[in-house]
Image 1 (cartoon, one colour):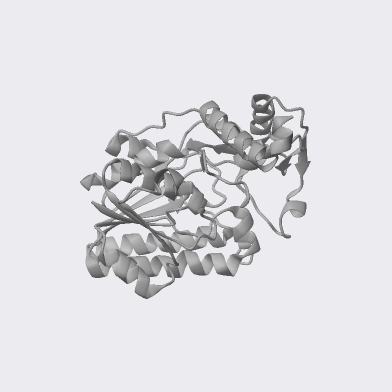
Image 2: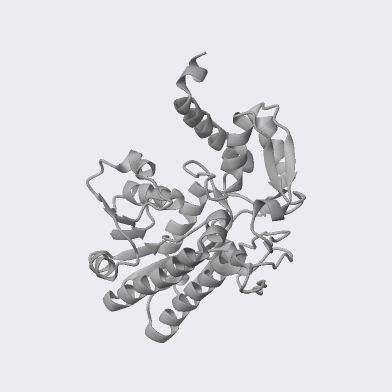
Length: 331
């Protein structure tokens, strides 16, 4: 098969590209490198079945050409990360809606199966028990930039459902919950790589708010496995699936665990939201997925623990820090 992966040099996209190539598929990557990195593709760069194009999903002519040449589209390209979305809401909103529109238009034109990567941000402030795919969305004011990403992804999902129901386009939506692991950067607000690097550098670990907000973290390899299973299942077409772990941890407990795993002496300090983000920023207290549907349809459940995730993330971060400071590393 031939796959087009938008955002394929990003954190999740590069792992997906590696896995598709390992299966013997051809992979074309379209990425503008705004948050992705060519180095993420280092392990597959010389594979003759990999093609990389530096470009944007907002380029209608290029998108049309690439979609026409593939069998399946996996649309991962998006402005991601709370920090980036809050700081650049207009750019984020435009990319996440108009880019997706162009992808869907081309996929419909050439009748290509399309997987849309959505997000747990869809649920907004809904902090009730494990969230099912049909759970309500609870969003704050449109004036609060924090909710622009959720709103945009909601539109993207509406497009997926409408194209499937009205035009018969084979679509699959995956809602990803806090995916973590190697190649993830903390530059855009991703909590685990940010805290790990602070601990390894002996800096204070900054926890926003009171740290009692809870999250569930899933290894990127488990997420990619779920995506591959769903792409091969006819029963998945036209459906939406939560993809995540049910292992819940508060952010302050996560910070303490990272300090211990790193062997660090760094303190944990609390930063009020109004100091970390623009005025009016809102967060959710709890975000836990119910993945019963995915388990039933695809037989999937995550196999890697939070300890596995931290071990790999710490190992990668140590190597990066050593490369940045070779004299310190050798002393």
